[in-house]
Image (cartoon, rainbow, N blue to C red; front, side):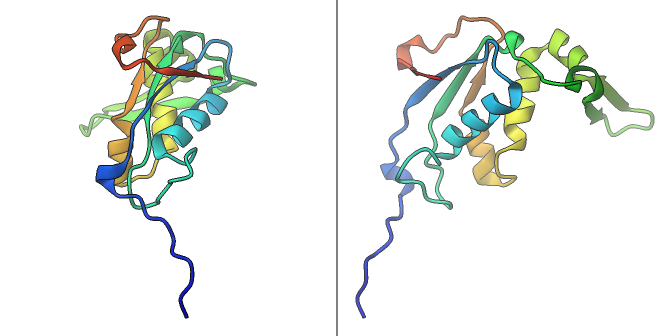
Length: 144
C-alpha cells in the first residue's frame, strides 16, 4: 500500500528568520512561551522534531518584563558553585535588579529541550535589557 509521505525537514534546507519581541509590560511566562515556540520552530509548518527548524529571537526591554502574583518575592533562582557552602539563592526581584537578561534567558531555556538540539536552539536567543540591539542588519520582524 502506497500512502502519503510525511515531510521531514533537512538541516541544510532550513531557512532562518529573525524575530523581535518587546518584553515591555508582558508577563514573563507568556513572553518565554512565545520565544520558545519560535526557537524550536513549532510556529512553522515545516516543524520536524529531530531537526532544529527554529528561527532567531531578539528580546528587548527585558528590564520592563512583568511578573504576576507574588513571583517577584517568592520565586527564587538557585545556583551552586560546586564548593562546600557555595549555594546562592536569589529572589526574582534581586535577579531582575542585577541583570534582567539572565532571568529572561533562564526562563526561556527551561522551556527548550534538554538535549544538544535544545542547546543549539538556545544559542539563537539574544536578550537585551534596554530597547536597543545590535541586530538591525538582520532586519528582525516584529511580533506581538
